[in-house]
Length: 402
Image (cartoon, rainbow, N blue to C red; front, side, top):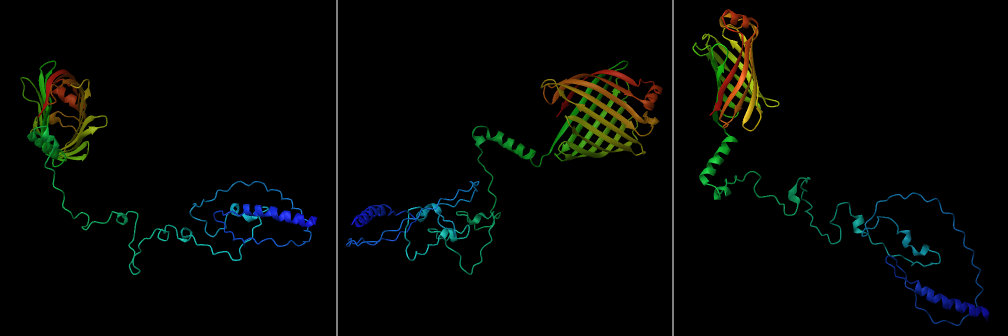
C-alpha cells in the first residue's frame, strides 16, 4: 500500500512539471502530446531500479583563444550547418524530449542557396530577365547607361551643335555696355590671336665725363604676337661737338621657345664707324631665375669676323615707383680688327647703376653712374687714337616706351 501511494504522488508531481516544460520556442518543433486519459485503476508496479549515479563531468580543457569567424546575418542561415548548440534543449540535463518519428524537411534558404550578388532569387526581388536568345550586353564599371535614369541619349555624343555664345552680360547692367564690349574684345585678343607692338628706349641719356660730354641711346622695338615677332634694335653713342662714334642696327626674327625665353636670328649692320661691315646674328633673350634680364648674341661678319655680346640687368624695387637697376655689358672678339679698333678677347665692358622714378610706367627719368673701359689690344688701339681706354661718367636720362 505504501508503494502505491508513493507512485501516485510521483505521477501527480510530474504532471505540472511536464506542463511547464511545454514551451513553444522559435525554431523548436515539438510533437503534440496526446490528451491525458483518465487515470486507470492503479496497479502494483515493480519497484523502480535505483538511478545510476551520474558520471562526473570531464575536466574542462584549457580555454583556447577565440577564433574570429565570419558572421552570418540574422536573416540568413549558415548554409549546410546544424543548429547552434545553444538552441538544442534536448542536450540539457533533465530535458528528455522525444522527437517525432519523421522530421519535416528543412525549407531551403533562398539567400543561402543563391549565388553571390544574385538578388533575383530573393523573396520580393522579382526582376525581369532578358530573353533566352538575347546576348547579354558587356558591362563595365564606366557604363553608366545601365543605372536607373541614365539611359543613353538618342543622338551620339558630340553630334549636337555648340550652344550659341551668351548675348546678355551681367556687367552691362552696371557699367557702360560700350566699355565692357571693348574689355571683352581685349580679353579675347590677349588670350587668343594676340598681336601688338612696343617701342622701348631703355637708355636715352646725357653723359657727363672728364673732357667732352657725350650722349647715348639704346632702343628696342617689336611687332607681332606672343610667339612670333619682328624685333628692331638700335644703339649708338657720341660726344658733343664731334661726329657720331658708333651706330648699329639689328633686324631680328624672335620666337618664344619657353615662357621666359625667346630665340633670335637676323642681321646686324654697323653704320658707323665702318659702314661696309654686316653680321649674321643668332642669340637668346629672356628672364633668368631671380628675374635677371639677360641677352646673349653671337655675330658673324661678312668678312669672317666672329664677335659676341652678353648683357644683363636687374630691377631692384626700393618702392613701387623708385627702382634701382644695376647693369653690365661685355663684348668679345675672336680676332683682332685694327680697322675698327677692336682687339681679340674681352674687347670692352660697361658696369653701371641707375636709379629711376616711374612717374608712370611708360615714363621714368633716371640718374646714375657708369664705368666703361677697353682691355687688351682694344685699349692699345684707343691710346694710339688719342682716347682714354677707361672713363667714369655720371648719367641722367629718361626711360620711356609706347
